[in-house]
Amino acid sequence: MKGKRRKHIPLRTCVACREKRPKRELVRLVCTPEGSLEVDLRGKRAGRGAYVCRKPECWQAALQPQRLSRALKCQVSAEDTAALEAQIASLFEAESTVKTAVLSEAAGR
Ligand SMILES: [Zn+2]
View (cartoon, rainbow, N blue to C red):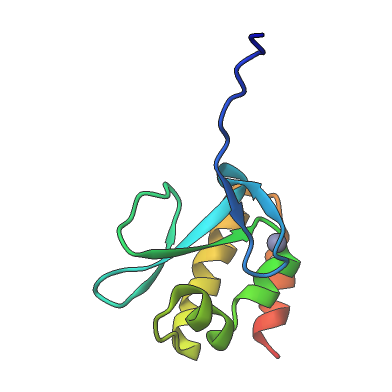
C-alpha cells in the first residue's frame, strides 16, 4: 500500500517554551566558532544553535545569560544578551510583528 509521501519538516525546540515548531517559524541564535553570539536569520551559520519562537514572551525568557549558556554550550554574558536583544528588537521592528516596547521593558529589569 502506497500512502502519500509526507513532506519532511524539520522541527526545532524553542529554548524558552520548549515547544516544537517548524524550523522556519523560529529564529536561530548561534554561538559562532569565534565565540560571539549572533542572530542567524538564514539558519546557515556555523556553530551551535538555539531556537526561539517569534514571540516576545519567549525572547524575554530566552535572553538570559544562564539559559543561553546552557542551550548553546558556550559562555554567554549579560552584554551578549543585551546586544542580541537589540538585534532582535530591530528585527521585530522591521517585520513590525511585535512591539519592541515589550522587549525593552524586559531589558529594564
Ligand atoms: Zn517559544
